[in-house]
Length: 241
View 1 (cartoon, helix red, strand yellow):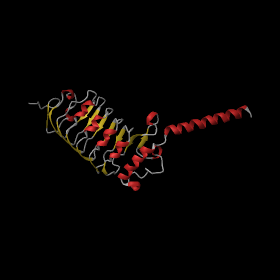
View 2 (tube, rainbow, N blue to C red; view 1 turned 60 degrees about the horizontal axis):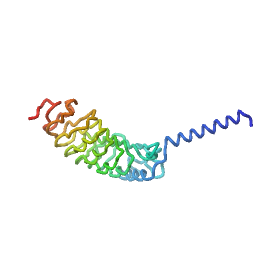
View 3 (cartoon, rainbow, N blue to C red; view 1 turned 120 degrees about the vertical axis):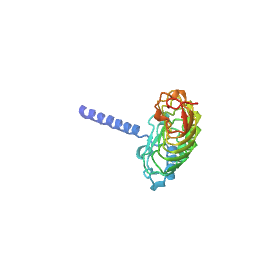
View 4 (cartoon, helix red, strand yellow; view 1 turned 180 degrees about the vertical axis):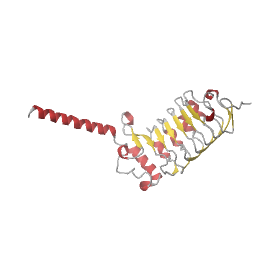
């Protein structure tokens, strides 16, 4: 066999192997347990003919389903690590507790769906890898689960523009990686607990909060605390008696 032909065959063999490896890396096979969990979520939100109709039983959730991404290395390989529903996607009903059975879920968005109602599931407290959660602009009610703020990896939290009530759980103080915290435009009451020093952005405006603003928050803008029942102290003009 001529040398040039041999080199060509070697080149194309290596190229084919590279492309195969790249494809496999880009789209790891979906974990069967995670897929079963998401099929329960699909059925909760209207079934095979609902708003998640491309979540099909016989397709791969990592490569063919919308709103879903999977880990590509290590223990998270092929595991669901991100669920990001489009805003105003038309989902309705409660948030299924099944999301708590996705152990590698780190990034979660289910926002701006006005017909999403009910409470924030306590099962979210099982999501030990969760670092980002957006549940804003829905119609959620009830308290913020204390379990949610025991997730040590949480960095960004947006629960704004719902109808949440009760206090801000004091467990938020222990979130040493928390950088963004928005619970504005709800019906939260009680006082603001001390916040971690890692915080870069906060908005608790338009609630029913009362009492002194923790001294560690006086450097944030006034608008972040306005329109509450009786908050006082810097950065607000009203002093505490």
